[in-house]
Amino acid sequence: MMLLAAASAHAHVALDQPEAPAGTSYRAAFKVGHGCDGAATKEIVVTLPEAALRGAKPMPKAGWTLTTKRRPLKTPHDSHGKTVTDELAEVRWTANSETDHLPDGWYDEFVLRASLPAEAGELWFQVRQVCTQGEWNWAERPSVASPKPRAPAVRLQVVPARMESHVH
View 1 (cartoon, helix red, strand yellow):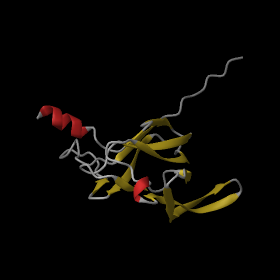
View 2 (cartoon, rainbow, N blue to C red):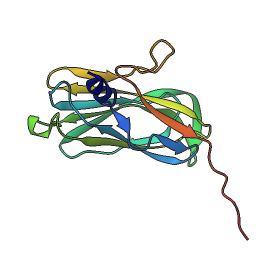
View 3 (cartoon, rainbow, N blue to C red):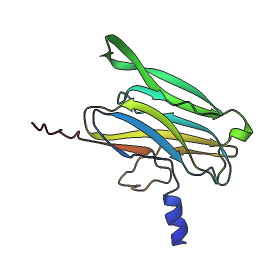
């Protein structure tokens, strides 16, 4: 019984690199290691944290259709001489056919790139995993009442940027 509980505690979507320095370019690889109670995964939907990432771009995946949704920024910013008024809000990868589904016993990654904020802190991504039968909504954050949620959201720990020493 204890082994089963330990195994299920680690069976969630996670980042390949769960920690990154503030103010850097970051490659977010969302690792999907199982389906839904034996059913194959046919869609992954990642909701990005609001006003936290700049220039986010998803990576296409062979056999999967990539779609995105954008949302307006509360505070526009400049990027390369242009005013940016919206940001990537959601990335959706949908398998093109049954043969492209991710079988329950297989592993894959779904990737996007973005610039991290200058401030350290936690960023939370909600990931919805849709399977041929059922789905997981990886969206719960730990709390005092539930320190180890059943379907945890994906956490990125943004750490303070290192000060590079300048040697003469």
